[in-house]
Length: 435
Image (cartoon, rainbow, N blue to C red):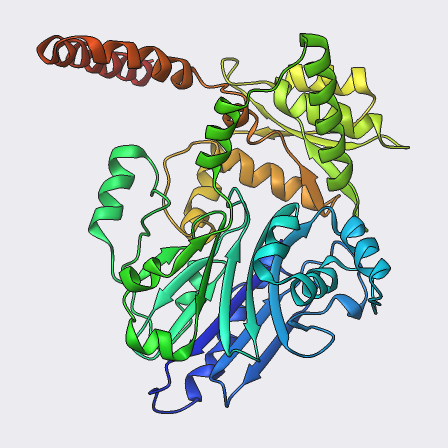
């Protein structure tokens, strides 16, 4: 992962001095990009970009950011990876364009310059969050990938609009004040996480997945509140629209045909993510999702894939034996991390500095530790995360579908059933705690 940060001053800002904060903001993201940093400032326009680089594709200086387009119109600070950039590059080369290096960032800029931002976004297959400055229209564009895999926080202060990959970078801007958002904190305590439409700090919002925020300094001067900025967001992709279209036009085919199509899509997705210039591995839990990903990695690799898993002392939680069995079957180069209670306690004080917002998922500790283990051997690791969301793997998905049928019941009866389910849930939690 890389780290991005940026500042757009309001036209009535007293001076350009706040732009100097880009260095401090970018330094706060050093852990995201240990391979180098870069800065770009246009004092006359009142804009500054910062970038911390984790080199994955094209390790040369040709991949250095912030990067300018061939004509100089666009400047970008980009975090993520465009998996189909080789195909896009060939198409652009056929149209007469030439490239200095072999990185995806240069292809992105050329695509935006050739096709326009909105069209280019629909052509990008990947995970990304970026800030783009259009020198011709003096407009800042902030964009995020379809599913929001890459984070992008936006803050509004008295003098500037500020954005970054993490809140700790925004905190480095001198005009920003950390004030707890009580509604967001309440949501966290009731749900276990801060929803996407909220942020733990007031005056900050997360750019929604599949969206773009375009703003000039004059726009920001007229409407500086988070609510006003949020109204300027437009969506270039919608999961709800894709789901609705899928219902209206369901895929037709036999089980065998659909299985073959899914296999082809999964192989393509894994192959594109393996196209890197650094050591690659995978997290393997032994479950269906990670096992499928690792199996497709090994099937398309000429050497044993490096795999990593966490082993627990408690038998009820330990999936390491399943992971080891899958690793032996596939012939991967497998490594286990044995997690003890003492190790978990030792790392716990670090969590507030690592995660931007609080969340109540106990997997954050083993995930952090296995990532640190993997980083000693590889730079990129594929995982099975997202499989349950894509294929309705959680029990709550089935429960939600069944619950819709209960809406036909009279309201008093629904309330009674809800109260009974709540009592059962509390009893189950109490039973787990007592054990």
